[in-house]
Image 1 (cartoon, one colour):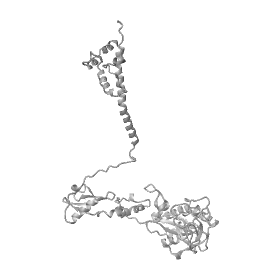
Image 2: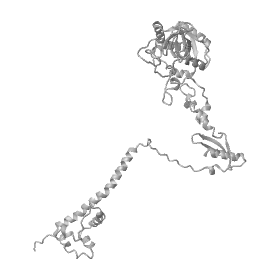
Image 3: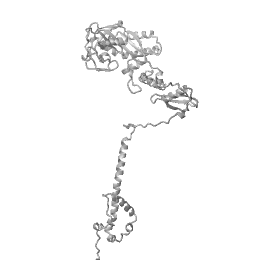
Length: 465
């Protein structure tokens, strides 16, 4: 993995307090991982051959990398700051990869071997100071360059500026829709900055990668974090995924179609291979019907009549294939409304209940209702017992009523009548409730009509006797 020391001009990535030309505190591989990172999976493997690879990959500013030959056999590792050959003068960069993997990268990128330059030396302190001073001027030069281009009236935008390591050349990166005439512009730049000028045009996607930002998904742009190559994206990609052709939704910050439209394209193409053609028409007894919509995930196709396209009918792709086979045999199928099967509602069970905001309150309400229902008979029995005990206390206090139950045989023929006469009008309800609660041993009350009534409530003595 490549180093991100401030000596490389990339202040956003730093791997340690010591930033020297030898790399990151004599560590062979840094732990930084970002767009320019390279993992050397052969770093711990010794080369069995005696011939050591002298090719090195060096990175510079603005995602620029190149390959160089270590002709002087300098001990280099990932993160070493080196001074390399350039035209004119020399440049300063950071080693991003060494060893046998460099040959694979050269073959992968089809880099011409005859154009490989050489490494002069490890960057000394003077090289680093000149390089750092040149990097500090870049922001001011970029603003001044934009003012000059605007004054001349050129339809272009200066995106970034890169100084060479020895400050002998400035490279201006710009974006433009049309061709730009630089003859007058280069004269103005050479007179203002007093150095050699180089102009390089980049695309709008490369500009967005350099500027960075947050996408509509809420995450940092892919082109500025990990995406290194830009594949072409066209509107057919959106059509395959059944997306509406809305430029405002499909375009990214660069103004072009989003690169993420290509991510799921293979899955959609695989699913659409099992579907009939979207231009399929069905011959029914009621008229001709055409396909108006496709749902890749539900595996359904919507059809509508040519005469009345307001009513849509959805069918599974298996049924559509059978209907197409009937039409090929010359048979007309039934009307769409007769072929339509009733939709069976799918009951989904939300185990987590994330969409239910009152899931905790409902549980408490249910428990409270249960407790209330369980406590009702006990409370009712206690209340009934208290109501039943009220008149008994009155009987014991009043002597004339306590004498009535002395002769139990007198009321043996019809027992309920004396109780109804002796008690007031609101008491019959309490008596009926008392009979219902007699099954509960806690609320069971003695019956005054039984013989054992005399034991609990003996009659009072007569004062006149």
